[in-house]
Every structure is written in C-alpha cells, then in structure tokens.
Amino acid sequence: MKFFQKFYEVISRGEPADPDEPIELIVVPAASGPMTLARLREDGFDATGHENFNVATETTNHFRILVPRREFERASERLKGIL
Image (cartoon, rainbow, N blue to C red; front, side):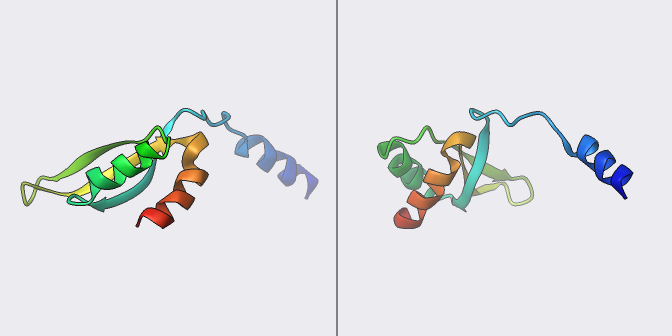
C-alpha cells in the first residue's frame, strides 16, 4: 500500500498556481454584466469581462467576469452583496 501512496503523491503534484492568472468568477446575463463589472472595479478588484457570443443565435446573451486568482475569495464574497 505504501508504494501506491508514494506513486499518487508523485503524480498529483503540479506546478504552483499563478496568483495573477485570471480565473472565471461568474457568468451573468449580458444586460447586467457591465454594471456588475463596474461595481467590482469600484470596490478595488482587478476584474475584467467580456461578452460571450452565441454563434447559433448570433447574439450576445452572457457576460463573463474574470478576476486574478489571488482575489477570487474576496470577490466571491463581495459578489454576494452586489447580486
């Protein structure tokens, strides 16, 4: 059993996560996306966002908001108050 535990430890190690890597915080409806992004920026978060384009319907119906990995926890908490 010890061999498999060691083997699992070796294969499960990865590169440390980059704290500045943008990760998805939330996907909101396109109409409320820019306002939500602006509120996060006002609160000091380094948030970015962009509209998702649906090729089938040729419309933008969602807005994707990203924050740096280091700000994800705080931004998630703040988002509860915004939405």
